[in-house]
Image (cartoon, rainbow, N blue to C red; front, side, top):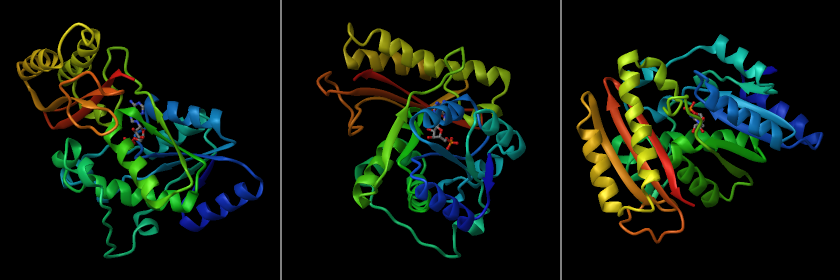
Length: 280
Ligand code: AMP
């Protein structure tokens, strides 16, 4: 696996791959890699001739400086994992390679920025779209791979791609979970054993909603699930909603073609998100 540190090295490599007519799969990450990330890499390898991953803890998408400072980082271990997954290239830029001083970015995301993670983390999706647009421009991947765990992010990147007419196909990879159901996340590393137990309530609640989706009304599903979550000590519910999966508009009807349940909660210092597709 080749480690690329500068934008110039990255773009030279992309040029060589294109000259050899190789299709490029791109998997952006912020490191602290786990099985979720590695599944994306393996899927990219199956679908493309060569795979480029990136590890960059993007400061512009953190609205909480403490979250940025505490974000887990382990470059040496990440590189071992990427090598093991047979990733071809990894881009690990220094911040100065990515941003010039006083850089300004605004992308009109519209409604999707005013709900759920958009309101809980102001400016988060501006930072996400800023970095993804840069990386897409530099890499021009044929397919870019994202996780369903960050479903709202996936919809926003789809909007970014459509707005700029970027020649990239997007792949939404199913969420990889621990054996107890907890959605894998780099932030899980910061949970202690007790918090980890509490965190499982999130996925369990989503699985319950799915199990009863056919026989209960959305109103009942939500009120039962919300009371379960709000009665869980040390879990601070941010939102639990059932939405049209194309627009993330909340729905009381089961008529939309694709329906998703989304949840976010804080457990101690750690904010976790999860979701499940109820109808597709
Ligand atoms: P992150 O490093 O958290 O920015 O995540 C990088 C990519 O991995 C994003 O597209 C995430 O949605 C995806 N990802 C993170 N956790 C999981 C998971 N448990 N299953 C599948 N994809 C994931």
